[in-house]
Amino acid sequence: MEIFIANLNDFLVDESFIQNCLLLFSESERQRFLSSKSLKSQKEFLIGRVILRSLLAQKLNCQANQIIIENSSKGRPEVVFPKTTLSFSLSHSAGCLVLIISSNNVAIDLEFLKLRDFKRIAEKNFSKKEKDFINSNPVVQNFYVIWTLKEALAKLHSESIFTIMKKTNFIVDLKNKEIKTDFDNNLSFETFELQEKFIFSIAKNKTLNLLNQSAQNAFFCVKNILPLVTHKIKNPPTLYKSQVKEIQ
Image (cartoon, rainbow, N blue to C red; front, side, top):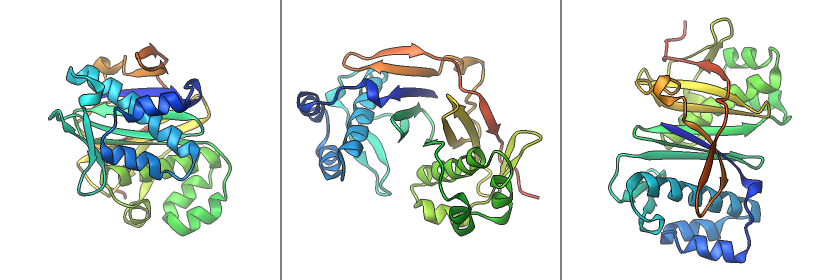
């Protein structure tokens, strides 16, 4: 598994850049781009897919415009050509993009640590134990730990976040820095802090170890694209991790 981090503000998105990028896309991707409701969401989609295609082209030994990405029957984007076992997941927030490419099914969610009406959102969507956790300090960080875990799980199963909200119960053990859930024993979860401004969580097959010795070079900052230049950055600190355990 590899994780890539990009600052969207590093990319100049003008008409020429847009038209060149659209030449790489499948028809469904072009329609997705054109249907985006704001320039901000268009830029996020465009840059994310261009970075993704550049990285996949390196791994699949092909040209970026040869790659075909379509939505599965459940609505999750996947590579349909060239044939590959690689999967990917993207998330962006407040000008930051994170992208995972893996040989196993995996999903990621990133959130900027901004103030919201945490109590109202938690009261509507979280279990009692989850609410108890986020009401302890630091409230902002703890809220986004639970939220990103649920978002990552929703992406992994191609379900609505609101459906997952009702199905899952995450308990964070502060003493042991461990995540517990009763959702699926075949999954595990990890949560990270990035630059003290973001929280991101990963849902994955529990046999997939993210931060083992062979994965120490998995974190990169994407600075430029076409051609792609990557720079290694310091691994973000792990806040919590789990092998799925049954909640007591």
